[in-house]
Length: 390
Image (cartoon, rainbow, N blue to C red; front, side, top):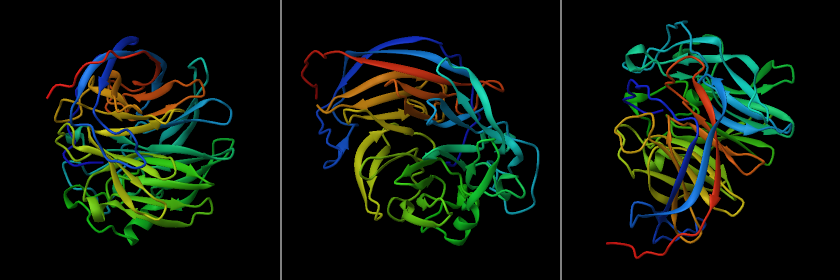
């Protein structure tokens, strides 16, 4: 996703945490009409109670997650990587060369009691050079069109050490078999963006998020910096080249609310407050909406229209376990710290129960099967009024 990826250290994660926190902001919370700068005027107060628990274990680099029509939680997994090599143009060291496999990635299905079912184990997976930590990518995200499941591949393609299968979107059949409907590797190579990053250029891309909107699929790619529309027949067109106006900002997470809200990771080393959220129209117009965020890898919005932001790492220059956070922008302009202490979280979604579900140890887990889904239950309470300090 970004240049200068480090070797990640392991850290313990507490299974159940109880957090009590709230943050006041002198901000306008209306994301439809204003720009919000979260780096200004922070004032923390206790006001929200949040309980967290490990909902499911045993996953391999969990990434995007969504609830299916059957009420179960489906989780895209980066997988286990692989040892295959390729001789095409690879990502330059220290990130490359990649090694991979055609069957190391997959999708898991989790019931209401947290029982994990390996729904698919036959999708590509790859890993970076061991010198950069051997970070794994595979299935980046999933989306439903009606009752049909689609998966976004990020760990495939020759430049990721996988022969014969490009990065792209696949249609998943009920028996777990799949069919490629859109070859995104070939499309990106034939349609370069305006401002690619040569020191961290991945020829096959490093796709991160996918959404369904009105029967079509929309895929977001951080390395090149673009948003594509893909029909279920496999027709591809670019919605926006984000690099053309913003440069190499590494866009990662998105939701759709009358337009796309898109957050970015930002290149390493990490500087707190350098990530943003933009609003992108279907016509490709981009407008800055929120500033002052850090390493954004997830966005969600609750039924009251409050924006939730998943921050992978805070207070450190490189990805660090134990420093991930969820914050919320309230209508009153308050910035509420919902939860903290996550280990390299990579995605989140609301469940039908109104709780948040977060992919934890989304990369760099301490052991195979070390990925988790954390359930976050937020209950609001009133904040005490205090004057903001200059």
